[in-house]
Structures are given as structure tokens and as C-alpha cells.
Length: 151
Image (cartoon, rainbow, N blue to C red; front, side):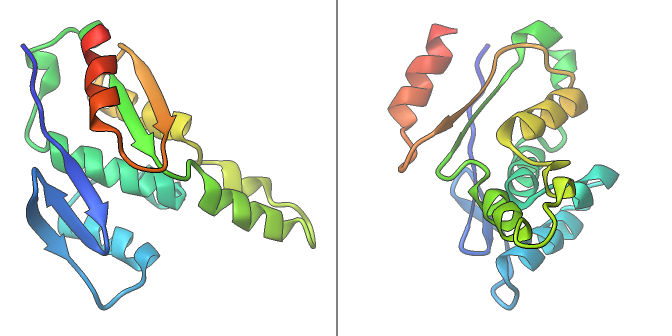
């Protein structure tokens, strides 16, 4: 049984299947992610250690999977995570590069990169299937559908 849905986080808005669930235009992007986390009453202490990419993906997954207990319908090996991003971890990469002017900060990379996000999602939702993150300038729905169907 396949289930389909989408979450978008852009322009300080969170949308689920095209419907606006949350908006906060009076804050910057980083504060928006924290406000969305609080708005959706997500309880995951590691959230505040994550970089912006991980926070964005984590909130998107939580909104998409809210109130769904996937392990009641699927075996762990039948569930996976397929993500797409435009810039991978560029935000953190740029901050790390700036830190090298003084003393490089390995702490910037504790909760960064798409594979860390995928790992957190897999642990939280008990998924042991396929995991991948693709980088595209523009989201390519057809590619993702064909990739998922090939699995």
C-alpha cells in the first residue's frame, strides 16, 4: 500500500499537501524554524542541536507524519526516507568556512548534513529501508516518483 503526501517549508510558511498550516512573517528564517517547532508541539530535544537544513527537514517530516504510526502498517525494512534539497548543507558549510578565519569549529558539524537528518528520521520513525538525499536546483517530482517506484 502506497501513501502519498508532501510538506513544503518556504517563505516562512509550512504547507501540508498545499494547505497552509503555519506562517510567521515577522521573524527571520532561523527563528521561524524554532517557532514552527514550538507551534507544532514537537518534542525532540536534539532539535536545537541541528543545523538549519536538519531543522527544516525534521519539521517537514513531523508535519507529514503527524499522528501516523507507520510501524503498525509496515515493517521497518518497508519504510525509507527519500529527500531532495537544493543546497545540501551549504548554510553550515559557509558558517564553518567563516569560522576558519579564527579557529575552525567542528561543533558546527555535530548535527548537519542530509545523512544526519535521514538518520534522525529513521531512528524516530523506526525506518530501516532505503535512504537517499538528492541535490537538484529545482524539485524534480518525476525523478522522485520513478526512483521510489523502482524500489
